[in-house]
Image 1 (tube, rainbow, N blue to C red):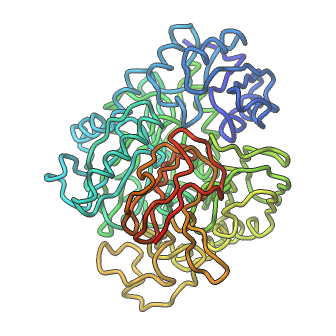
Image 2 (image 1 turned 60 degrees about the vertical axis):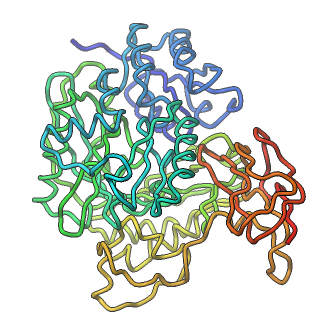
Image 3 (image 1 turned 180 degrees about the vertical axis):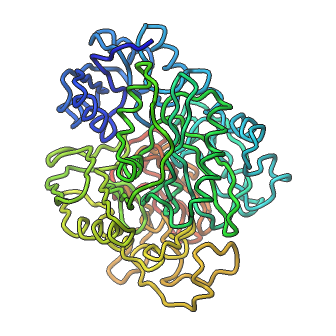
Length: 541
């Protein structure tokens, strides 16, 4: 049975809300935006047919009430916020509306990363080992059981760091997902991050649409994605795709989703997690398959059959994420976008316009630039030219970093792993090394990176005088909220001892003392909102 969707509410904001509206409008649907009190007049609200206020993007009851007020037939959650919330899916269904996503029971199974691994293992899908720290060993990864996107994740290499990392991961998971449950997973050094795009309908059909390579990441969040992966051939693509489909069938999956894997140098792969929603990087799959994934989501939600088969990618596509953030430290930035222009010849999915503010409370993404070509080199060349021609004024962005990234020889050679930015500090000069060391996949024994160690977040928190010497203060490197104060006046602190933890865009940043010192003044308390450059703590040697 199919149910026509005439009016669609998107329970999200920014770029993804705008993206869904474009497809919905093209299908003749009336579009409804929501906005929180601090987001009135935002870009996504200006392009919708109707706007409904809500108390919070995280309040399922408010979102459903807004849908009912607007006379919506369906709710699309986008990604982030409540996109994988069983409670929202149940509330939408209870109101008699169509939910554009997997049913609540599937969201529970897929959203619990530990249960998802159990199901995957039972379906014959290889998984990354999990367990207690003494079982997993070091290095290990702490991960939030209820979420993703880099929140609630910490790499721990030394047992002495475990307690502090565990506390921070739990706190970040609670803030980001309302659930502080975490687990321990073996940390795989320098793999590829490869994910398989899934589509399934409510009639028993499940297919995959090939893979995306998302290995270039900062702070466990992706910055460059491409399809197909330069690491896969047709046989490995088929093997990984079959594993992803087996997992989807075991879950009873419905809708669009993504199975994420780590791929080792020897071609073995292990399942990480299933993201039960549309992904930020879905446009690269659209460009190599010719499909509109949001349209497929809406058709499945209306009860239609897929009528599609798995397919090999045609050509190549690559996506770069343009953020309001520092190019070296990746610290998020806020402010008004006074100038914004993009070139023709590439796809641009934007979340703001010139004159808009990039707020402190939400993700700092400005836009995604996606280029396609008959070959990988052609797609990368086209993206490089587009980035050169992109103009952003009024707010600091990662545009210089992206221009450097798409021309880096390791990236151009298709050899980048998840360790790429640890081994190649942003904006550093690429170094020529013997071919034996150029294996971007080597799991051990890599040479020291050029340009020194990657930039530390706390470096941006220390004032320097004209001669470059550290002044006796720690400052906020970006706008945010103080969530912990770890030192008091009169305390004697050690070098690199955390003094304050600031949260911005749902990510925690601990700020440490640059040297052994005595704390002379603490200017903030927990819960304070701070601006970039504000002095938080004063020190005396």
